[in-house]
Image (cartoon, rainbow, N blue to C red):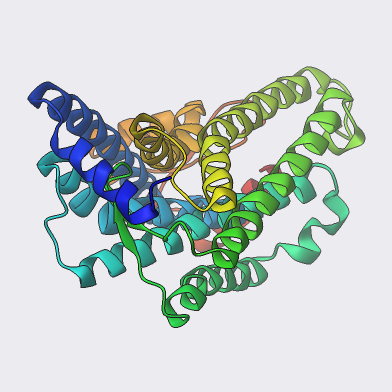
Length: 350
């Protein structure tokens, strides 16, 4: 049985032995994913900046998620991983390797934490509305986001302070933990991926049940509006279904690969599996703007407004989970009191 060091050397030889066609295809596909990641997340953040009516409590979490996803691409995958897979080597020094591994863990944990908070937010908003305002005011949401980012920032510290170093994994084409890091890898996979995944699954399962049963959480107090409510139920269910499916598809293989490697204490999979590992992580970050934005017609309109540079003329309120699927347009010159009332109304309907 080869040692982990010998396995990494063999992986490096495989990386360098790729044909020009393989290099172009792999690098091109990764560059395409990164392009979608950058454009999608940057546009989402730009919408939040230009449209003050978008700054609702749920959208604060959308911003946090977009920052972590954009950061993963801009600070880790984009300039470093793309060059590694394109040049078939690690063209940087050891300090850059340590930096990339640290940032990769930080951004991945921040993204997973935010997804979990979003699931909990949706759970209270849809399933347990009475407690929603108790836990999710703007001030409390800001505190939750800050704490989650601080936790994410300090998550890799125990690994670094224990004397372990990040190593370049040729098949993953980025720097990451050593395979024999033992307890820390188990902690990272279990606490920061496994537990959040279960929380997300539980929250959305309860939401699906509530939507399916047409519970009182979605019933209007007025007669004659049941048709509109049912339309909203379908739209929410479709969006949540996409969130669960894509998150599960992207992160389950990553979780399984890390768990198996940690248990066996060696790299157990072929190069293609680790290549898919890195692609799936990046795809997950690229898909989040699609899931939370493009699937909603109102967000699609906002993306078009960004492309047409029409925000200089009009401010448009967008409801991520709209009741009737229509955006509400309000002149930027409206007085602040009316804007505040509209913001509160938007939050109530999200």
